[in-house]
Image 1 (cartoon, rainbow, N blue to C red):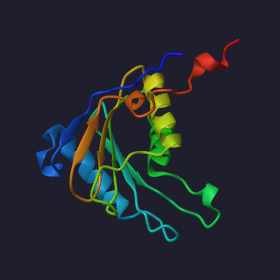
Image 2 (cartoon, rainbow, N blue to C red):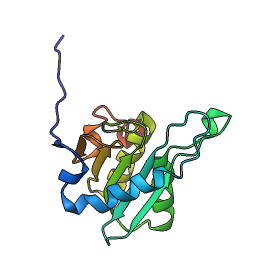
Image 3 (tube, one colour):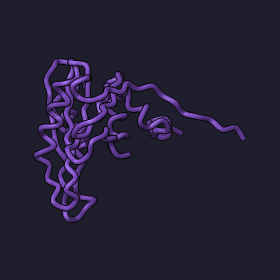
Image 4 (cartoon, rainbow, N blue to C red):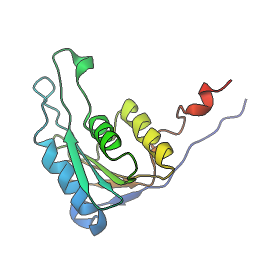
Length: 158
């Protein structure tokens, strides 16, 4: 038996003001849309925003439902919309934010897999910015950093 260890690099900023200006607009969009989240059951609001390679920005928020599995995460709803409407335009940046906590908000496991699938589809990594209401901000280079043992098409082959 041999134990292995995963490691990855990321960039940590002290706060949103210290963030590279190239990422501020997409983070501000995620912050703003989080306030529109429909979260009457958990009251945990999440916003996500993407910047496409052409500079356009789109955003979405989480949408809960009394039948919990029917709700949708901000990230998956947004990526599905972008993929359906702009299938040939690559996603350059993704920001995920919440007003509920003061530290970086990581995507759930399903969203991590979904982001990874979008990277595979476009054959290009997506820069991911994670933030809370205030406090530190994390910048990741790729979804695989969030999900090192990911499931992909290789598992579906004979």
